[in-house]
Length: 169
Image (spheres, rainbow, N blue to C red):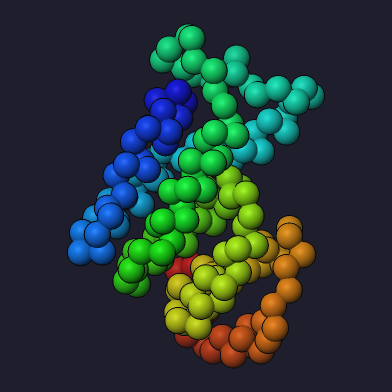
């Protein structure tokens, strides 16, 4: 846990290319895989404990002198994620991005409702990307009371027979 924390704090922000020419699908896929490995379990892990303190005694640290700061980790995840979501994505990397967002990143985001436009744009793409974005939209509606104009029209427009044969249904 301390290794992942310090990689987020010191390295991942510096690995982001400054030039748009440095982006390619292989780099984006590799970066998303790295994020997938380094994002810790959901921040809801503290809910199993009665105290409001971090569960430091259950974390596995390489260095005993480390103090795990979940707020710093959260800020770093938000900074990196704000860059990653703006990169040019093809279908494969956008699908990987949405899976990572829904499974690991969303609990760490400070303002997940800012993803609304991105998820709605992804919904317009169709196919498995639309299904993944629909899951994110459902989370925003259910947990964050988000509303968006014409959401149900877009939802009903998705219902076609081939949608039930997709992997992410």
